[in-house]
Amino acid sequence: MKTSLVWFRNDLRLHDNEVLVSAINNSDQVLPVFIFDDKYWDQSKFGHVRTGSFRTRFIIESVENLRQNLRSKGGELMVRSGNPIDIIKNLIHEFEVSAIYTSAEVAQEEKTLQNQLSDLDIETHFYHQASLFHPHDLPFNSNEMPDVFTPFRKKVDKKIEVREPHQAPSEIKTPLFTNPGNVPQFEELGLEEPKTDDRTALAFNGGENAALERLHHYFWETRELLHYKQKRNGLIGADYSSKFSPYLAAGCISPRKIYHEVKKFEQEVKSNSSTYWLIFELMWRDFFRFLMVKHKTSIFKITGLWNVRKEWEKPNELFEKWKLGQTGIPFIDANMRELLYTGFMSNRGRQNVASFLTKDLKIDWRYGADWFESQLIDYDVYSNWGNWNYVSGVGSDPRKERRFNIALQAQKYDKNADYIKLWVPEISHLDAENILTWHNYSGSDQKEMAPDYPKMIYQSEYWR
Ligand SMILES: Cc1cc2nc3c(=O)[nH]c(=O)nc-3n(C[C@H](O)[C@H](O)[C@H](O)COP(=O)(O)OP(=O)(O)OC[C@H]3O[C@@H](n4cnc5c(N)ncnc54)[C@H](O)[C@@H]3O)c2cc1C
Image (cartoon, rainbow, N blue to C red; front, side):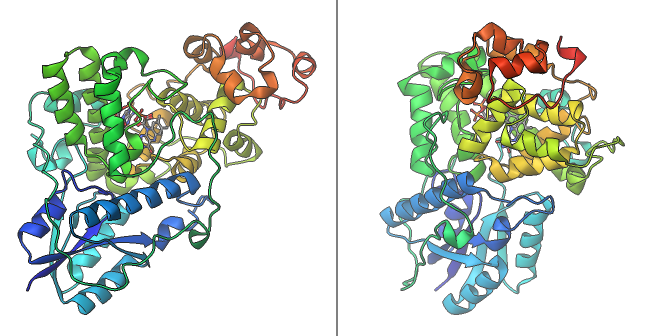
């Protein structure tokens, strides 16, 4: 009897899961396993816990949902915590496993694990299943990958097919085991359970079921997809953008599933610039993933993808104020507080706070990326470190010195200061005009108008 171990990582779903389908097709029974790898709850070298409480909650819920879905097909999910290679070695022995199936990741740390698996004396199978385009379908070798998005898009957009998603298996046979293992709770991972803030853009419940419900809501129930392009720079609420990112990051939904659902929607309802734009954004996601294949670890280095040498400030008191949303700059504080209290921030917000940290305060961009890694519910190694390279001017943005004018950005995207008022109650009694021109007031005027709001840590002529 052939038993194959299916190691779930960032692919916590039954639909479009080639790893699972192939293991089932080539084995008599499969042993599905998820491992809470200790190192993801360690401190990073920049001093933040690598997986903060919001993402931890999302992962816990996603694993619980995966287990429930496997059970509904007659299977079971084994859950373990610790070092994945040691755990897998023991399971190979205990269940006489003859092959291992898992997804192929391309970041260094994940690849190291894959290499360690390959070194075990056992058959291994790796499948690329996290991107929109399958890497084998790309019309260039990884070393010819364009370093800038537009040339990349032009080579792939409508030029290569997005593969059809795999159907979820109808039945799953797992070996009998008496100790499936509990999903660890927060204390075991060294964290406190996060409080849910009523102001959160969306109550991000983890799991494949929630992901498919979100897709249904955004496409079919509300048809918000039709307005995506116009609304995607919004700041408040659930539906200004898709909110697919945490689900994509944990693999609760596949980008191919989203793509083919867009195509169905275009046929059955309407095709417009918004339906296209969602796919366009998924291409950005692929872009950062494939960039890492080419540039490997340079994306994590201070000089970034493009080996840019700049003088960076070490993280200081200003960095701590940035993290906590206590800079005295309303638009920055609103965004940083949203991240701190909910684990999410809009794309518009992310660009502004990252530009402010790196182009105004000139603080080493890697500390900002690391804080995002810790806090974001949708953290994805490629999108996070790639976007930080981009915004800080060390990779993939040809306009390296581009700096966001924070004051103008707030005036444009938060016209009535509703977003600032939501997150910065110390100034919510003021008129939008006062809030949006806050930088023009003297320190003593600011103190008089909002005694509880922190003093501005930085002032730029550029904003006036
Ligand atoms: C400094 C910085 C850090 C970021 N870190 C992450 C991260 O860790 N994880 C992450 O998923 N996204 C990251 N992004 C990209 C983007 O901000 C989020 O994907 C988006 O805000 C998520 O909301 P949404 O799902 O509603 O996006 P939508 O606007 O609905 O977009 C749909 C999907 O397209 C993809 N996408 C959209 N914009 C981008 C982009 N700029 N880069 C890559 N993919 C994109 C995402 O998968 C997203 O879910 C970062 C952006 C910046 C500027």
